Image: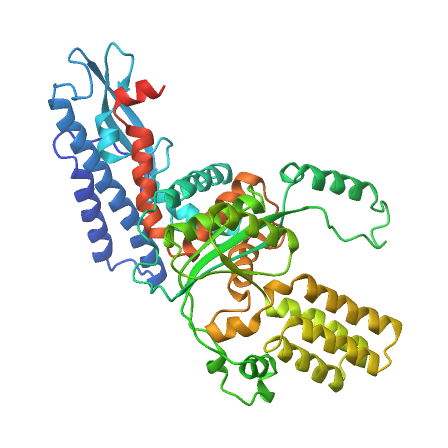
Length: 508
């Protein structure tokens, strides 16, 4: 079936639609030519697209005929405005159509198209639905896979244009959340904790998208690589990544747990004695996840606090920030909380702390030994019930009583100093008693699902605009704000492309 634009009928703009329907019915009624079900499906699939394209074209031609009969200038134009008929093409999910419309021009040298405004036509040749389909598929899979799938649906968009569509689709991300005044946690109880978390993960970038210091190190790394022998060992790439900052804000229903439940849940499934569900917190509610590759960590943390402030402007609830132990992150969170005059409880991820305890245990008793496991479980349990100072004293005493070697004593001292340096963020006893979370599973899961599952596919290297756009689109989907964002984006596009010419003239 033809897919090129057809000239409008002088009598009935929908005559081509009726002709196509008659042709399809004749074809389906003809049983003299044997055809497989697959051939019939393909014929009907192509015909259905052409039916929709012709129906859309008929609608546009009908609107154009009505517009030609109305000689009154639009209210936004001067009374002396003149008009002329112009056409533009629009590439839709059904195929290409022609949009005939009137362009009005007055003494202000402004051309205004009422039909473009009424239809909210995009500035480029691709329809908003094409833009949406491209953005949704590129956010989930590689460009090549997305293009191949869309091509099977009759939607052909070259890669460069597809990239532009994705960037355009994500352009209202910041404004959407800035104007998102309705609380995301409507109905959340004041005793439901307001939890924030922040982490960073690397994305492989093209050289021009790296930060200056990283680009310099990458150049030095390339010059140090061996040339010639392809079998010679090569240094692993370490300076072709740029860090993406991921933040999350959510409401956490409280659930009191015991140290015994936490310890039991850390054991292998076959060795657990308690019901695992009893040690799990209720699922997070109203979770909003964000990721950025262009902003630094300090700016991302500020945006994270903005979302928390929007949810709880009077600071009635307890604010919790879960971190992985990075001192720079800790300092930036403290500084932002002080700037806003809000008190936050910073809790270090238990699993990160446990890694230091396990290193000390393995140094004392040997890796994989049962005594090492018992030692680690003992002191992790004490971290959940005692003060950090007492736990550190017990570790050091244990190393002395066992007459530890210098290397083992050094590992224990490293663990002890790590705990003492983060003393104020390790009050797990109080956190468990209040029913608060003590692990960063939410943000680590977000790093894996939001960033790595798409940005780290084999062979992917990103530039800044595309990486930022894809991260934003995926964040909207993870936060379940995609549908609301689509509506907002269309409203913003209408404002950008079809504002009152008088307003546009002043803005110019």
